[in-house]
Amino acid sequence: ATEQQILVTGIKVVDLLAPYQRGGKIGLFGGAGVGKTVLIMELINNVAKAHGGFSVFAGVGERTREGNDLYREMIESGVIKLGDKQSESKCALVYGQMNEPPGARARVGLTGLTVAEHFRDAEGQDVLLFIDNIFRFTQANSEVSALLGRIPSAVGYQPTLATDLGGLQERITTTKKGSITS
Image (cartoon, rainbow, N blue to C red):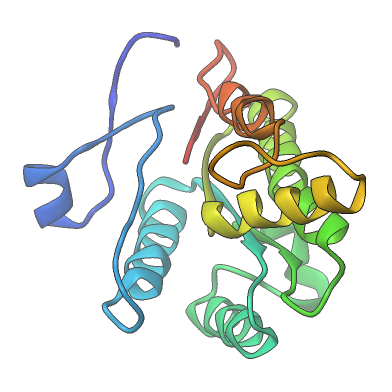
């Protein structure tokens, strides 16, 4: 359904004080070590176990260690299953790590979104999409733009910044089949 609904996260303080809109967009801002990844893990775990929902995590410019830690935690919590039970997994992880070329890092956010769209449109799922982090997505696109010889804007960003971010944001939406909340 395309009417506005609240996404129940199972985290009482979030559901009461700052509820998330199903099909909406949320930003988690904070310095290193304040618990953003812990909150993301809890959201993925709660949505998977309480509601049978699916999550996609797109790590843009992530450190290899952080990506590996998240993967291991997902296996331990049972959100990602290996072997014969792989089809029962409730999360997909997509990475463009910080040591990879800017083109790979620039595309990983869109790749994660494409995976989320598949589960929304083909499987009829309500999907949680996490892009960590949107600044590194913008930065990677800026590097690609510089490599292509485009002249940056007055503030230093690529001239395609609005279309790069707009193209990503417009696809995060609710349809009659399901929703993507990011």
